[in-house]
Image (tube, rainbow, N blue to C red):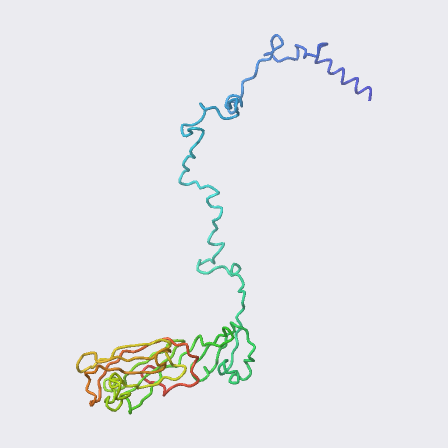
Length: 316
């Protein structure tokens, strides 16, 4: 240990004199009179003192012209350059869609909070006894029921909402009824979901007719009833929730002579009246009438039976 320490001290004595200064023979050639000239800096190196002032900020004479009042405008980026901050919220289409970009990737679709339960059987779920035990009565809201026979009325798909079963896909097809005591021709009806349509025809050239008003009108008095014939009463399942109206034309005279009115819930629900101008001859049958088709909404439950017979005019 002492030998090693003695050796190190001897090595230092070879470089320093008794004043602890580096011996002249060990100084570089630039050392003169005990001073060493600074070596030139490389071209890509600059002294801090050359670019910073006493306040630690870049010297004013080194700032570009775009910097005024200590505020520097950001230079315009080249057209082929984009900041990372501008695209940090951007994702590629391939991360969201399939290869054809027309369907969201399945793994990105959240699971439904309410699973729809599907049941299938005969009859209609609002009458559990027709379903052969499929409907127990304790089904949760949003449950769907597919009727294999449409309950004989075209009610194919049902949904339970608010504890009540509603038809969401149903079609009765066109039905037609006749009543020669009131009119000539046929009245055709069809319910699709919550919409009902009435069409009047079946006579000559598929026209419609009304038995003379002296016989078919609702009453002799008051005056307006003398020219109004109630030709049909719609049962539950077929009624309108609002008044629905269309025109009646005399095909021979090429003139409007009245209107057909479907009564809503606040105005004779289910009434189908044909109201004529008081200039119409009450003693003459009104034939060759052209009546516009009437379509209206309903809030009635789905009918338990169908009116008339299936129509061959517009088969479904």
